[in-house]
Image 1 (cartoon, rainbow, N blue to C red):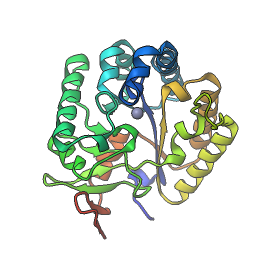
Image 2 (cartoon, helix red, strand yellow; image 1 turned 30 degrees about the vertical axis):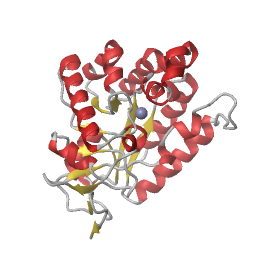
Image 3 (cartoon, helix red, strand yellow; image 1 turned 135 degrees about the vertical axis):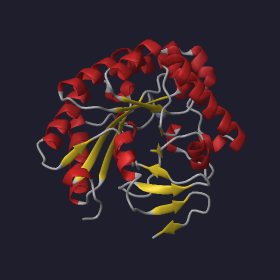
Length: 282
Ligand code: ZN
């Protein structure tokens, strides 16, 4: 077996949701964010309609998801985030105002991390153990900054499709990897006037189901990344429900939060990547 999962499972499945709300727009296009009601409302749909709908879907199937939430969303949409915590899902960090880490110095990165942790503590009285970087951008020094602040795992890199370890001066940080194929944004996100087309949910679900089938054979870690303002649309969630039904009808699938996967992976002998040098062992 390529990777050993608990209780003889063949693979792991994590359903993850990045609850960006307006934060990414504010970071990337501050002038448009200040001016455009339309652009803000498109993104507020996620916390207003998407999140409650996603929570109802997960509840129907008895599943726990992982929700990565920027500090800005926690502050401005606390009432939408609290029910996620109360339903027992995992809440984890996702930047403060969706800062792209490649634009920050180590010192600025540390400040942004501290600010996030303060917001989590004061608004929801919790300290997340998981982190996903905004736009999956990560610097060589980021794992050390995370580990030093008590984070157990990151879920932003694409170096494998099973968990691995990133070395830091204070011990290994678990990486639970992601990939673009399993992100709803390149499939569904529509930018008016651009050449991208809205994908047919049937095609997207077929691609995701095929990747799941392959990952199960390969003892992989299937981490699906969705955004409530994109995937929270009614028909797309019907598609997600079909995918959940397909995965549940397949034997040997461990549905878990990313924190649960990371807790397991932290105990396993596995590939180690030196985060600072970029070298790999074995
Ligand atoms: Zn995001």
